[in-house]
Image (cartoon, rainbow, N blue to C red; front, side, top):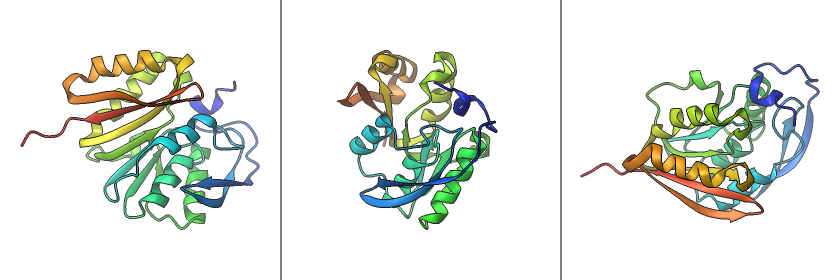
Length: 206
């Protein structure tokens, strides 16, 4: 697998743009895509499983798509919750440009496609949906998740889709250990070799 989309801010591969017909949030839409990003030719299987299994996102507040690619998760969040602000985060400049253009194409004004450092430090998320970049390596993945999961609002939930053969069960155990009483970590779905993990931030004591 070409790892360029995980590690490269400016991909060297061709930036030839093309349109792709996909179904997002129950709607048939056309999006723009290109090489040098994750899954440029379709909604990948893991992301499709995630989008099938997640509950409706909160209608308001801040939502996060961590590792947005061309935007299938962020666009779905925005289509389902047009009153929310959706942060589509990626290190790949081409992916961010595509997500911005796709949000504009679909009239989704609430999408903010930005690099991780451009998200204001005080923003807290009502929901996080992610097909995280497992192949960046365990250490980098752990650092990534520990950066973002603690930014859930009390009672907010993250849904992560991870391949069983890529360590979904051990990741669930690790998250439970690392987050401790601050969050509840559960496996909420299993399909076609993938697990969907839900991390729910502890509610504030009354």
